[in-house]
Length: 258
Image (cartoon, rainbow, N blue to C red):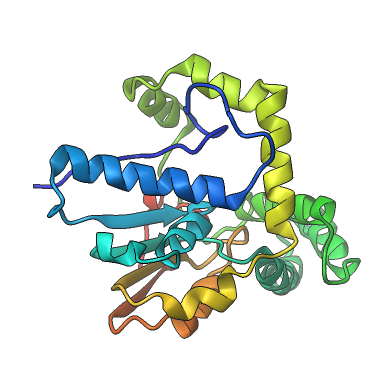
């Protein structure tokens, strides 16, 4: 009844081939996105019902595609899962969230050393952050997720490895995306552009397609308040938010209560 088409952008995931892009530009990646949609329509018909799903970094790519030109006419809806449409805003929410949680955990005498380190780093920051500070904050966000007791992960390392093997992903392509210095350099430059802020947030009111916003309550990487900002900005008649109370950055691998 339905199918899922996964797209890995140039220099990411299991993407193959050369970058063929001298300098990182969001416009190039969005054009690639448009080509994926065109290909699906060519293969399966212009009348297919397409729903765009973006998780994490896909939380920028999906709305950036939707606000460009008349791209929204190609899709029936947008699903945002723990997405990140605005890094400067993310940094504000992340610092706030980790400060609040560290106070609770330190008071409860749980992982005091780790939470103290996280708290002290956040207390030493002044907005706006540099790209280096943003990346370090992201590292601490991952650490906070790993020691938050409310998160109930169900996916073990062996299960994740088994799923990776079963997926038949080209391992050499994945390794190339991670280890190739050209890919790494491209990704760092692209992230640096993103970390300084884009004009996407101001364009969010252009979005009118139905929208489902998914978030993990304990996602320090992309705090759930980012979803609240999306809901407040978009012009969609139908927009629904679902927060998973026992999840961090990946609700799809958690046992959750809404």
